[in-house]
Amino acid sequence: MIPYKHEPFTDFTQKENEQALLEGFKTIEGYLGQDYPLIIGGERIMTEDKLVSFNPANKEETIGRVSKASRDLAEKAMNVADETFNTWRKMKPEFRADVLFKAAAIVRRRKHEFSALLVKEAGKPWHEADADTAEGIDFLEYYARQMLQLKEGMHVESRPGEYNQFHYIPLGVGVVISPWNFAFAIMAGTTAAALVTGNTVLLKPASTTPVVAYKFIEVLEEAGMPAGVVNFIPGSGSEIGDYIVDHPRTRFVSFTGSREVGTRIYERAAIVNEGQIWLKRVIAEMGGKDTIVVDNDADLELAAEAIVKSAFGFSGQKCSACSRAVIHEEVYDEVVERVEKLAKETTYGDPIDNQSFTGPVIDQASYDKIMSYIEIGKEEGRLVAGGVGDDSKGFFVAPTVFADLAPDARLMQEEIFGPVVGLTKAKNFDEAIEIANNTDYGLTGAVITNNREHIEQAREDFHVGNLYFNRGCTGAIVGYHPFGGFNMSGTDSKAGGPDYLQLHMQGKTTSEML
Ligand SMILES: NC(=O)c1ccc[n+]([C@@H]2O[C@H](COP(=O)([O-])OP(=O)(O)OC[C@H]3O[C@@H](n4cnc5c(N)ncnc54)[C@H](O)[C@@H]3O)[C@@H](O)[C@H]2O)c1
Ligand SMILES: N[C@@H](CCC=O)C(=O)O
Image 1: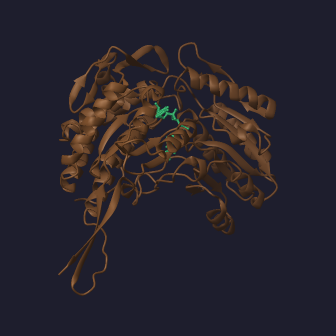
Image 2: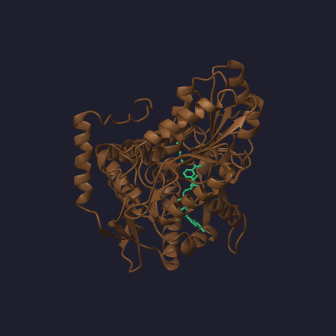
Image 3: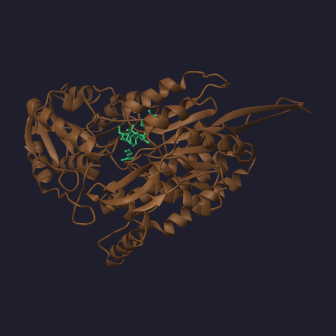
């Protein structure tokens, strides 16, 4: 087997690559607006009640109408997953890994189709859609390899006359609940991790991006995944979310999404319901309020670029997005000026056009929330760029910068999840790190500095799960930058890292007298 290497990003300045994505658009146009069923035990079930997925850059364009699971159908899916676990858990790890390798190969062949779908369904610009598809392929390739290592278990000692072994076995039925912002990568990665470790799955994708999830299940089936291993049950969080989390046969929940929903799931999963004979495990990857710190001796152009790209890439809709920057007072004015200039130059519009650096936000609720934070920002700080929106055709918000915010301002504390960044001033590096740590979150952060001592100080004291130096704070790569955060950012489960799969398994010791 060739060693793992991450999937390269596509250079769309090359004519043939541009053409390949345009072909991808043609392919998806062949199925836009279709109806999709649930998939339970391999059976396609069409329901009357549908989730309507539309293009956030053009509300009139329907991407698909996806059947919604009721509680009865969620119960049916649970029974199938529970039953299928009895056989799937006994399948060789090599077989399970091969499903992932094959799925990766299929997605790689259809890469530009998946990216085109992400442009339309999630509103991702070309380069972001391409990165999302590439990350999904990476998860499949990486977790398959990890499983092949873990199948051997871990070495333990044996005394004379005894033979001891330590192995990992699967947990049972996992509920996988995924977000819309990495509609392919996170959905595919969390599902793949659960199934390759021998568990069966109920997958509830985000309601705004269910079509790309359906396409992924088709890929898994084509790759040889037996019926009933992953059961596709889209539906509203409020209608079936609590039901599947609370279910006594749910063995673990793998959730990625907001702090609000994540803490709700964490609390509910702690309750032992009637008929339940285990403590549920919860993997929860939640929000962020991510900070870039700029030191007084930093490369200021690099700092401004890092802030702007991390703040406005995919309209700031990444848990890793830079939503605040803390800048040393000696360079504050110059950095603010450079950020203002770059923000005003940042293009945004319909991502079908590859000239747009960034596109729309996901839906009306998100647009309204971001615009209300912009109003709060006008009270709390000084608007230096953007501040306007247009939701007539799609949900567009201009890249927005507020300067001179107090470190405890709402704009500096609450996750906005939109293209809005707040800037504040620190007296010195110690104070900058203190401010960087003053939120409930702890997901990503970056420090722009040429001071080696400050790099080491930040390494120890900047309390985030993913800390970067002299670059932006987004763009973790599977297998290179294991991803997950501290405090209210979640359980620090480190997706794409060497100890992620173990969270989906339990260790079993056997000791035989010889
Ligand atoms: N830490 C990470 O790795 C990471 C990655 C991506 C996104 N996020 C976070 O996700 C959020 C954005 O995603 P979102 O808007 O899809 O989040 P969300 O919490 O609104 O939804 C996430 C998922 O939870 C489901 N859900 C909603 N209510 C539920 C309930 N009561 N029970 C069970 N499931 C329920 C949704 O339908 C969706 O599938 C941001 O806060 C972002 O920071 C975190
Ligand atoms: N892993 C992604 C963020 C995922 C959350 O939205 C990054 O590193 O930028």
